[in-house]
Length: 287
Image 1 (cartoon, helix red, strand yellow):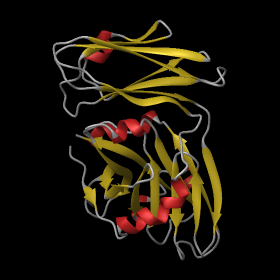
Image 2 (spheres, rainbow, N blue to C red; image 1 turned 60 degrees about the horizontal axis):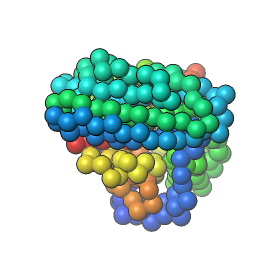
Image 3 (tube, rainbow, N blue to C red; image 1 turned 45 degrees about the vertical axis):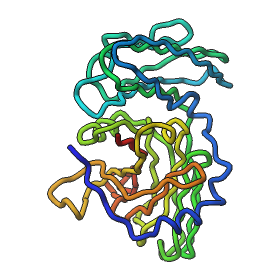
Image 4 (cartoon, rainbow, N blue to C red; image 1 turned 60 degrees about the vertical axis):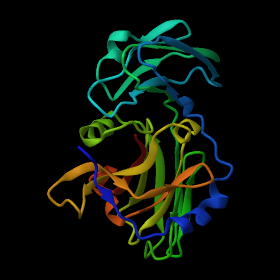
């Protein structure tokens, strides 16, 4: 099902200036240890790509996810993924139609990942390895406004009068299987293998907020278009449909971030713990 686009009230050109200083030095944090990396497939040909990466703390728990670059039900080419010589995904798993597969994996300080693709499809796969190390930040936002900066992932700016009293806001990175199920129910393409959660406590912001999400170089250099999408429980454009991911008008800035204005109704007390208001967003790829 095609996701419905939502219009914004902020001008994207102004957002580019707004975020220029805030994201210019961003890079990925420790939770993301490899990728997201595209591995292309060429119909009728077999090709094998080996890449190396390192991790600092091998005692963490890691997982590898592979996404299909296809937006159809035809699946991708048959292939295998090996890490440090051990088979992680078999041809039977990758050759079937899928959107995202995830498995735990053990890593060393220095690692090799080998991806071999062969078959009749030209669709790539996208491979990511992450640690389960928590990534979160908390900030107090006054009625005058303020920022929440989850370094190397996202920057959120609350304008004046977003809250009438000082409010504690938390932002975190999660890779929830339940959220992925909701995404797959109506999405047509791959996405960042994690979502960003913005929790504003016992009240939603009274105004739209400015958001910038750091994107990987592989997304920018691919043949896909990047869009921010949000999980919305009550969408005023589709009152008869609840709890699905919807596209948000967004633009790619010059600082390695995709930027948007997040509507207030994206925040729902159905998503946060103990009835708190939370927005769930990610970056989706559309071919």
